[in-house]
Amino acid sequence: MDDIDTFLLKFKGFYFGREALNVDFLENLDDFEIRDDDVFIITYPKSGTIWSQQLLSLIYFEEHCKRTENLETIDRAPFLEYNFRKMNFDERPSPRLFSSHLPYYLVPRGLKNKKVKIIYVYRNPKDVMCSYFHFSNMLSTLKPTSTFEEFMTLFLEGKVLGSLWFDHIKGWYEHKNYFNIQFMMYEEMKKDLKTSVKKICKFLGKELSEEVMDSVVRQATFQNMKYDPLANYENILNDKPEFKRTEGHFLRKGTVGDWKTHMTVEQNEKFDKIFQKKMKDFPLEFIWEINEE
Ligand code: A3P
Image (tube, rainbow, N blue to C red; front, side, top):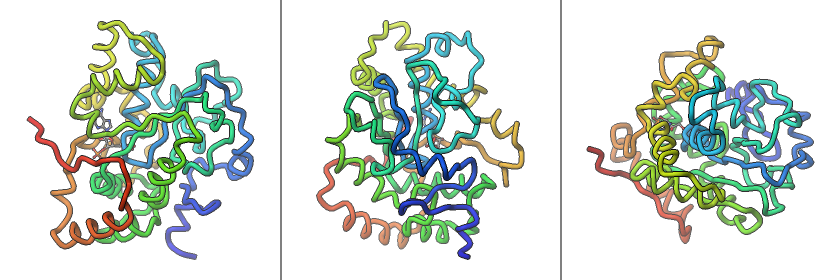
């Protein structure tokens, strides 16, 4: 048995993490009952999932925004395929927010009714890879690697939870016409969160007052989320300390261009070559660095 099989399960060509995975549920995922007003956050891991969970929870739930409820964002926007909290999804009141790392071809077929709104958040893959390297070492449910080089090899082979980054984004983008989907870029959110929130709200058909909009943006900045116990996932790790292999946080740095402090010139050139080949003619743009004051 390959070492990665301890951590990952390949199902219909896609690598899932074994933790909180229910294969019977996966087998029947195609039939999972979708409601028209469900909203899905879809990401490749480390691309801004928690950030989006917080944004959508703030936009949809006044009690979340006003902090009159004591509910974790993971419970506001739970993962569909990893039911960590053993929720009964059928009993959740509408509108239901869901998060998922699924590839386009494994989502419930109800998502193709074009009513369900999907927000796909993507991030430049070099930063995804760096974030993922640290995350895999921190979380005991993922395979650790002793060097960045070792992780890069796994990442480029797609031997990680979420499989190959290139396949994930291209799959979703190339099949976008089957879905009601809005693509959002992590780096644009980082550059100008308010404009990104407005774009998300427009897509969702939500009109927020200027005051609520400001509150949403404020509560979704990296700094504020990092110290927000309901949004930073720290409680989840505190409840299950065995999930943590080493020190670290879900909200680590939250920057653009961290890859420059990780990749050697050689690694970068190798990555660029593969990127250019795989992403040839791909229309979405990527931002690899920004000047942060
Ligand atoms: P880093 O490891 O580069 O810091 P995911 O939620 O998909 O696992 O993605 C995690 C990445 O998103 C982490 O990146 C994390 O710090 C970053 N992130 C989370 N909340 C953020 C926010 N409010 N602003 C910017 N980045 C955020």
